[in-house]
Length: 520
Image 1 (spheres, helix red, strand yellow):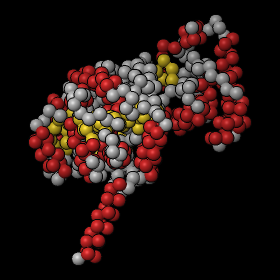
Image 2 (cartoon, one colour; image 1 turned 30 degrees about the vertical axis):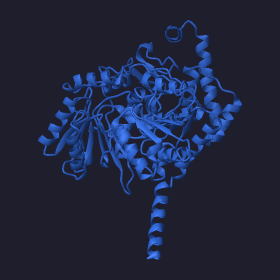
Image 3 (cartoon, helix red, strand yellow; image 1 turned 180 degrees about the horizontal axis):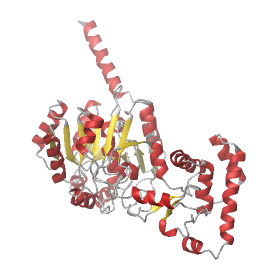
């Protein structure tokens, strides 16, 4: 009897240990956050990619915080589903819920004088914390340490987070998580050229409305959705992201008419009906779940491997939340993303490098820009209005008429374009060189451009930076670059001197019309 009881206790203890066993990178997040708080920092923002196990990290921090006699945690989230999910996670991890207040910001603001004074404030999806309601809460509990959690600390208006948080702790990037089997690898299929010029990207609401208005003319959602699903993911369950309820319902109708069982669901769907739909999807009773922002933040969705993007966006937050929904790890699994709206080419793939920072960033201009082409000599992307006498304004190379015509053809609307696989190299090849970034970063872009269109990556690199952007480099900097990239120093110096000579020649030709047009 006693032996049996001891065995049960040991098994229970092992189970609890299993629950609390964090992965090394998760424990590092916890340790770094605690370290900053113990040093007196009042705000720490924790960034970790979607699917990296945010809930267990939060549970471990809360469990530790409420262990002290006076410890009480205020947990804030803007959606009911997030609140319900975290409460379940706390229960699973044996957190003392009597010492935790779990509420939406609106409810907290109306109960500031009634709820227990917290010793720690945690905000889930912390990029929402710029709203006035959150600030009112933070101001009321001035001096109480704050932790913010988000996979994507970024806002469409370019605002930063330095007014709330002092430090940022970053988890491993998505490439690392895939390599170490914490996330599934993926294949991304997209359209080479999508007309996004008629989409109003001012905010998420306008994005959705304006893209839906163009839907009937196929101006923003291109490629045959049914055909490409059959080609790349036949028979697999998939989640479709649409801009509006009407478009989502229409896509579900298309699938059903094609003999592929599909259902629509959205945030306004009755909760019982929504729960029933999700359960049916989990039981594989139908193949395609069409939705509007439902399966983004906070909704617990059955494991799936195929994502179909039919909602154009300029929000990196929304982009990663949606595209990575199919990347939950399973041995042998490869997620498939069918991008019919150009989100990948415009915002990057999940494995692209994202510069997360607490600082404000300049708001990006609308995606629609002037017609451009890339010079085959220096690799510079040039506005066609800058070209005079068929010469590249950066290096003076002759631009062939055939090339200009071919480039024009790429921008023509193709009513039935084919989806092709997009890789990280494809994304890099579309990027512009950045003066403020290190040479190693720009060299990745130059190599991608050279692999795609030919040419010497070193000449492309310095053609873009030194000729066009007038950036100079010290020999010591070039030596460090050559050593870190494993490139022959003499080749680096030869390419740089070529670019420097071209740049100096341009300075002397002050009477050239094209120079006045570009640099004055």
